[in-house]
Each structure stands twice: as structure tokens, then as C-alpha cells.
Length: 244
Image (cartoon, rainbow, N blue to C red; front, side, top):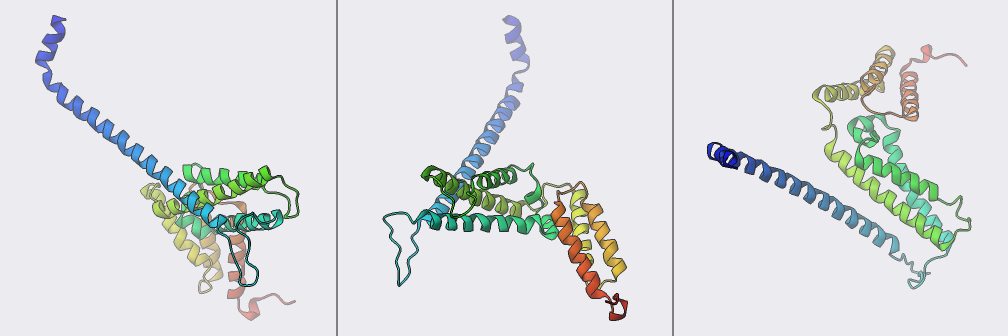
């Protein structure tokens, strides 16, 4: 014990940096907790807004809808199908557009927490979707599908906002340069003012720059190839085009 107090007598000054480090760690944990709480509130607020919009009665001048009881199941399914399809269409705008994927790469990165959450919500909504608006569904199944569509909408909105906020900030400087190069080359690949050789070369370079950098679906590649082919065909002189 005497040795311990002798040590403290010689090295009392070590207490100050240790206290500072402990305080910094506590502040870091507190900041992370505040961020998590803020994100949770954002999710709850978005869910509340979407649910409120979904339950707002829509009336017409000739045939007002009752607000005291729910609409028939086919009508509810039509509304849910429309909402489901609208979010799917917004997702496909990214999934099939290479230019958007370059601009907002986290939308294609399933390793990102928000993107992964959105993809899980999409899968759940797809699995719970009835086969048609005429399908016979129980009240429980209808409620489960409605909740899944709402979660799908919320998760996509949050993932999209975050992707537009962070853009390519999660990439290294070298990777950001590759994305910038791919973006410039993509403009050339679909530019009618460029020669066919320039467009073909630009297209191949785009594929090379993005390889291993961002995830691009086969469908997106097919859409891009069709677009490049159309531009190539549009850029030919009449004498260059094959005869019918």
C-alpha cells in the first residue's frame, strides 16, 4: 500500500489526462446517443405523417366518402397497391439509372444501414402483397400489408434523404475521382455530338471506372447499353445505316 501511495506521489499529474480522456469518451457517447435519438424521432415523425395522410378521407362534391368506417377491401388494396408501386418506381429510378447511381452511390450499397433497412422493408412489403385487388384477405393480413407499405415508404424516404446528403463522402479521394471520371465519360457515351468511336470508348471506360466501386444491376447495364446504342444509331448519317 505504501508503494501505491508513493507511486501516486510521483505520478499525480497522470490524473489530469486520464480525467480528460474519460470526459471525452463520455461526451462522444452522449453525442452518439443524441444522434440515435434524433434519428428515432425522425422515423417516428415520418411514420406519423404518412399514416395521417393515408387515413385522411378524400371527399368529392358528388359522392363524399364516409369517415366513420373504412372503405371496402378492394378499394383499400387499390390504394395500397398504388402507394407500393409508387415507392418501387422511385427506387427503380435509381436502380436503373447509372447516372443517378454515380451521383448518389449509397442508394445501391446494401452495406449502408439505411439502404439495407429500406431493402428489407421492400422485401417485406413484396412478400405481404396480395396477388390482386380481388384477392380475399383477412383483416389481419390487410393490416400487416398496410403497415409494411408504410414502413417501405418511410425507409425509402430516409435512405433517399441520407443518400442525397452524403453523396460520395464515404469514398476515398481516389474513389471520388473515379466516380467523377465515370460521370464525365457517361455524358460522352450518350452524346450525339461525339463520334461513334468516342461513345463506344467512353462506355467501356465507364464500366471500368465503376467496376468494384458501386453496385450496378444487370438491368441498369442493359438500359445504359440500349441508350448508347440508340445514340449511336441516331448519330449515323443516312448513308451509314443498313438498308432494309
